[in-house]
Figure 1 (cartoon, helix red, strand yellow):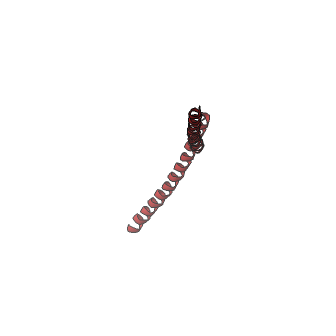
Figure 2 (figure 1 turned 120 degrees about the vertical axis):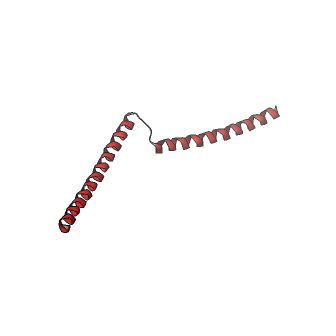
Figure 3 (figure 1 turned 90 degrees about the horizontal axis):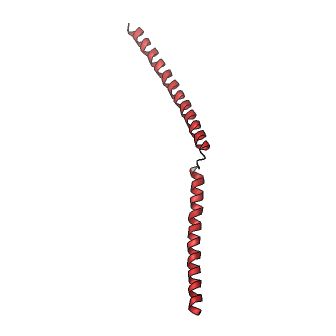
Length: 85
């Protein structure tokens, strides 16, 4: 009886192991399908990728800093002109 029950539990363990593998494969497949669908929806909505947004934000920050520096130079030049007049 002990050998039969041991074999029975071994078979149950194999089935559980196989079921676990199947479940993990199924989960990976679902993850892939969901990710593809989300990417498709975002592309249809013309949503900007984070990397592109970061690049444009950095460019805008640099342009703003340059604009402020030029504004200060212009103010200084205008002050010199008004002092000479």
